Length: 181
Image (cartoon, rainbow, N blue to C red; front, side):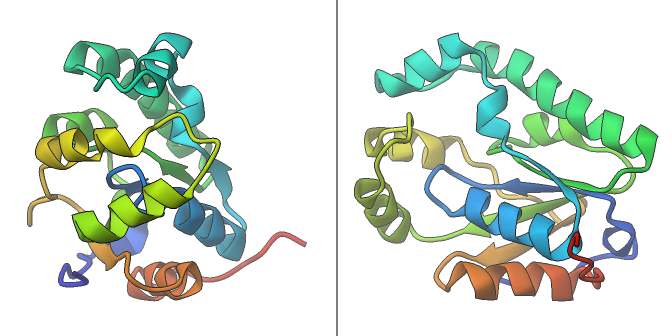
């Protein structure tokens, strides 16, 4: 699933939006990439309003109306980092193109962590303490619109270790590791 080739715009990445369905490993990969680069990191799930968290915890899929205010908060984080010149990595499912359109800006690259429903379902069933139940995976997969060729993105296969996946992101986007010391 690593078929996407970064464009020249991707090589000017200043904010990475690590996207994909719940359970794909996007939070782990994003945190590792941010650590390797010494960039700011934000967990998009923590930006959800409590009403969204409650809904997902109850096993109810979010609607577009639920997601728009959350996407605006994530977009604000992105815009703030771009305006300040502070590179960052943020997680966000960004399942639909219309959601990515809210987040898109020059300097933003989407990193899609993608895997099979069996792999992701297995991961979700093994984790504890997350508000997103495995029962919502089917609705997320049904909602997912894969990034298209005209979207600045790369796709990383979720079937390897997080170390391998995060190293691929850094390498494919020609980013320079610069851990904070």
